[in-house]
Image 1 (cartoon, helix red, strand yellow):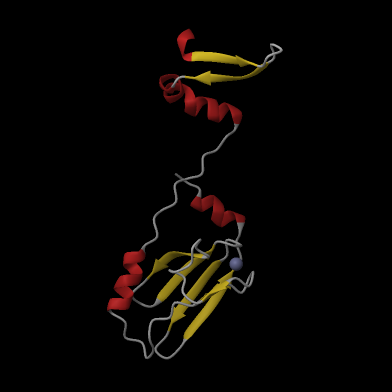
Image 2 (tube, rainbow, N blue to C red):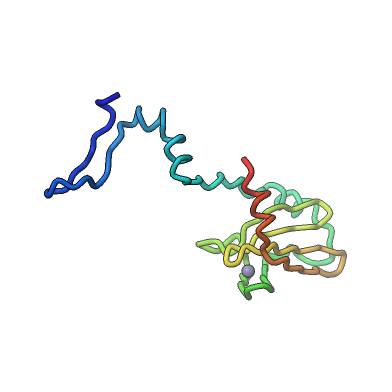
Length: 138
Ligand SMILES: [Zn+2]
């Protein structure tokens, strides 16, 4: 295993770090990260764009699909959430019943758009740590 670790020194002979081969890192990387308390961000689930597309396909509300999203918690808003680059809101879910939820990428609040026959009711739920814990499971 000695070949797999190379200690790096500066010109004065002070140890500044060490380099592992890819093979070594693959075998111990997770343990090292655990020991150092480094947590990897859980991979984010992809946006369920298909749910939104399905909702649009079966759209039977008395108005056109509305792309506007506004976060009451931090004031962030967009005329069309799918067009922002970088994105301001991330789609979390969209049901056929017309419940569409977003995550505000500014303040992590949940923005709910409830589509009723004649109107959209928007709700904003501030980010809470316990939600984060649930989302962090993997
Ligand atoms: Zn926000």
